[in-house]
Image (cartoon, rainbow, N blue to C red; front, top):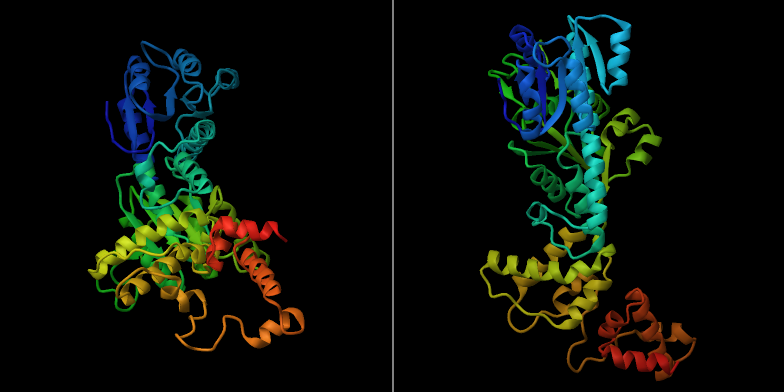
Length: 469
């Protein structure tokens, strides 16, 4: 009995002829399917299924001890979700029909064609993976819990929408299907790609490539590598990033900026599971999970003919959209504390404290640069900070706030022209109070606590004034 260990479910080959088992192994290894278990004694199969995580069984019919027909019945009864491919020398319609009715996933006649065996095994593994995903998603929806919490430790959140994304990614992390991660610049798409890698429990590396700015030759050379002499200057062979990511995850960022020729190469890689290094005659099997990301609307790019539809449909088998920071403002206090810690440690300064109104101002800011922008804001503020508490003034330029007037100065918070624009005449205090409350509530998105902080009031004081309206 031969074994190749892997993080993916095993392909179990069952046949009493060792030569046939060896030939099947060679076929599957050549196609990049590595986790293979061979079984020459049919009596060992059922105990094996109890111990191993199996994705598909390739089963001969005519064997001593236990026949394939008997084993098919046992597998169908005990492991109904497990695909079974029947391979036999009996080219009889009645036998094939009986096997399919008995629960077989596929029926192939010896001598098998390489392409058909490999294609059948891949399809069976995909079906098995989909069944596992459905089961895992159902469990996630019912429990609402993330089991593998450490995989998402780098993503700081207390937002329920983000937790739901964690549950979904955990459910799909164990499959080898590509994942498309969408979201605006700065939301942390690479962190989510790394989380998928960690949650999948794979042994290989996480390798990241930014696709933006690559011409077709540079993209192919970076991704696939080259052989010696493939082009001028190729004085020695070099493996590509996809070879480095074997057994792990290859992350392609900014795929919306990929050239049409590079899109074709990526499509072939996903369709065929293999690639050609530059200058190579023979294809090399891909053994990496593919995760891609973009901040662009791929459907809009497809409509304009800038992104291939067939590539999009290959990539969106699993798709997730990361919400911008302005849609998860409850994460701002958590992120602010973490970035203050990081900035103080990096800049070798004491961590500053901050006034409550700072959170109010941050909570109503749009954050076009998302989490990355908040981090840059905090580092800038800590670098310039001297003593005392951080205040909104520490972030004034970045948040677009007007600095306070100098002591003894005459410049008011609102200019005279703006004051006249409110009422058409010089306004009364009551009118300006009402205007300021309305403006603060508008900027705070209706959040009375944030609006009160903008006005320098307590929430209770603002509520009393609103009740007098």
